[in-house]
Length: 395
Image 1 (tube, helix red, strand yellow):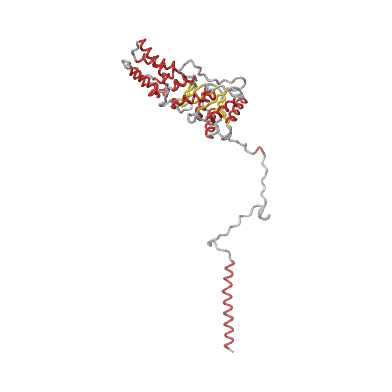
Image 2: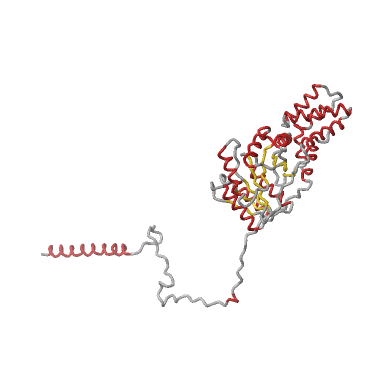
C-alpha cells in the first residue's frame, strides 16, 4: 500500500513538471520577435490625419492668406538666341579674295608661268590652251580666248609679264560677259513678295546655299521667309529652319514625305500674309537624268505661280563637277527656266573656268559664288574682281 501511494505521488509530480515546462514555451511563441530577429513583413505606414482618432490628432487647419501677402508670380522665359547680323555684301568678293586665290594653282599660276617667257612659241600657246581647258573653261571658249590673246600680243608687241597679264585679265573678263544682268530680283511687287526658287542636284550644297542666300538678302535690307519644300529629308527642313532662326526669318515646312508643291504654295501664301519682301523656296535635290523628279520640280513651279510668276530660279552648281555641271544646267533650264547660277565650292582647288563655260553655252549669268563654309562666304559675282583673284598679284 505504501508503494502504491508513493507511485501516485511520483506520477503527480512528473505531470506537474511537464506542464510547467510547456507553459513558458507557449508564452514565448506568443511574444513578438525581438529587434535583432529578421523580418519579411511590411510595416503599415502611419495613419494619416483623417485615419487617426479625433482625440489623438485634430484636423489640420490652414489659415487663409491675403492676396497682398503672397509673393508676386515670376515667369521665367527661356532666353532667345541673339540674332546674327550678316556682313554687308558690298565688296564681299574682294574681302574673300584670299580664299578665291587658292584656285589660282589650277587657273592662274600655270598661265602666268608660261606667259612670262621671253618668247611664246607654238608649244607655249598649246600649254596655255591646255591650262584653260583643264580649268574647265571649255574647248570652244579656250580657242576664242587664246586666239584673241595671240593677236593682241602680236599686234601690240607685248614683252613684259605685267603687260601680258593685263591682256589675259581683259580677255578672261570679256569671256565672263560683264554686261550681263547679275542683279537678284528680290523686291516685293504687286502686293506680294518676290519668289526665289532654289534648285540643284544632290550634294551641291543646295540647302546650305539657300540659307546663305537668305543672309545675303537680309544683309541688303530685305525681309526673308524660307519654304522647306525638300520634304524627302527631314534634316533638310531642320537645317533650313536653323539658318532662319539665326537671322530671325520664319520657315514654313510640311510633313515628312509630304507634297513639296503644297509646302511651296503655303510658304508664298504665308509671305503674302506677313508682308515679307522675299520668299526663298528650297527644293529637293535631284539628278538631272531622272524624268519623274524633274517633272515634280516643274509641278512645284507651276503651283507656286498660282500666286504669281516666280521672280528668280537659281541653279546651285558645284564648281568641282566641271563640265558635268554644264549638262546639269542645260536640263534644269529646260524644266524650270533657270535665271541665274550660284556657283559653290570655288575655294580650294576648284576649277573656276566653269563660270565661263556656263555663261557661254547657256547665256545664264552667274549671280553668286560660294568661297568657303562660313555663313557669309557667299558673294555677289563680279567678273573683274573674280579674274583678279584667280590670277593673283605675283607675276
